[in-house]
Length: 205
Length: 205
Image (cartoon, rainbow over all chains, first blue to last red; front, side):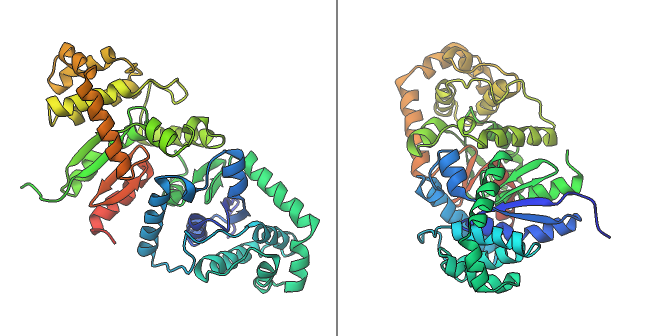
């Protein structure tokens, strides 16, 4: 039976390894509590660098070493193997993010499948998703044609949708990847999935 | 029977609410795994601001709101009541940190008790510990006289000890409060206490 409870808003950047890790667990976590997941592609470049005025993690002294250690530890524990290394140059994530919002508008309900495929291609297969062509190649997972999606990614509508979505995420206080909001309560970081789980189980405190 | 296993190195700043929260749990956690705790007073001002080039948490857009929400949530859950609010002006933490290293040198083995008393005074009672006098008033918990400790806090030895300790913490990659290192493995944040617990239970992975 369907539940009337609010979905979990899940924010991620295609560029974010921690966002990818969370994407593998959030649906099962939500399902345990009778919640759906509403996926949102965000841009760390806008949130962290422009709005917060911070450096990227791997350009931050001390923290960069920690993140590499912590990520390797997480991957060992969860049996993950990635072709992409965190120290590889980052792609421009905007084409993937515009692809996400094009799917949401044109194939509503398929955007999570598209996001999962994009994250898998980028992190597990190590594929470059920095160009509209590379992103459009994923169209079939959303039930679309690559040519149609390519046009969509380049459209003003997709640019506007991404800009609006990023602005909306900032307005809700989202600044990291992953970031979760449920019943108005924010949770930041893949290391807060357990807390989110306990929060939902307890009905808050 | 004593264990030969390495202690857990626990780093905190007297200024850090998350460091205070962790200080309440680290001894019990360590004891469950037959470990001792080695306490270290560090300075976020040196690690975060000077070395990493970041702003204080509460001066970082978006993150500041999150930290206030997250802290209030943590306190509700753990039944904590603090007279000090996170938005109160910070004290200069150097007198407390020098007091800590004076105790470690002059009353070895009492520095954790001193740290707990200082954190309690600052966070729970809302007392100012920004001056040597205020810090020296805690001397009895370490089995010392306030006058003797006051002199110690002002001494070159305490300044050197603090400077050396902060340099050593940076050399080990410590950049936050709380921060834990055990068997060479770093864990950052009060939200990693559960992970540290699981790591020790499993013997790593």
